Image (cartoon, rainbow, N blue to C red; front, side, top):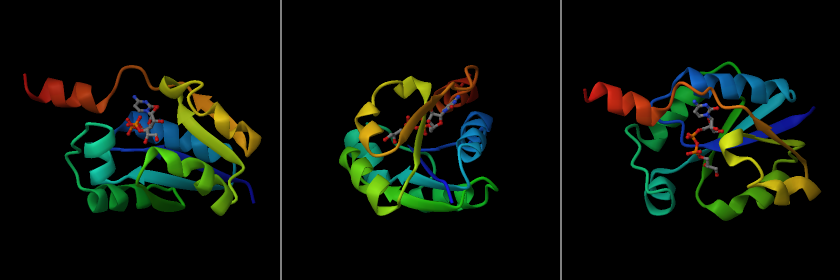
Length: 129
Ligand code: C2G
């Protein structure tokens, strides 16, 4: 079984996220999503997600491509996650191109094109008009 992992906040879940998750799952047979906790978002990403970790986790778990959701508590856990979960492929959107190449000695690293026209920030901005 080919195991894939990806990381993110996935707040205000939209079709760009779904496109990413669908293509990430296509890289293997089992997709793990490491979901940024509220604390990690706030302390390390200066992001305040609209939905809580539990709400975002429930939404991700409802997606057919997602097999397991685990917490992302810090930037440093990726190497450990890859070995602990026997990950074969690490996937991120290409806004992260090159940033996780240090994982290449442990697993395949794949950067997928983002869905350009949609983002959580854009949704928030448009809703405030
Ligand atoms: N994404 C995408 N297209 C969009 C928006 C997002 O392909 N229009 C992808 C991102 O590239 C990322 C994933 O969806 O791979 C999740 O996006 P975010 O929740 O914005 O993730 P981010 O805040 O970049 O967190 O340790 C890594 C971080 O947790 C990544």
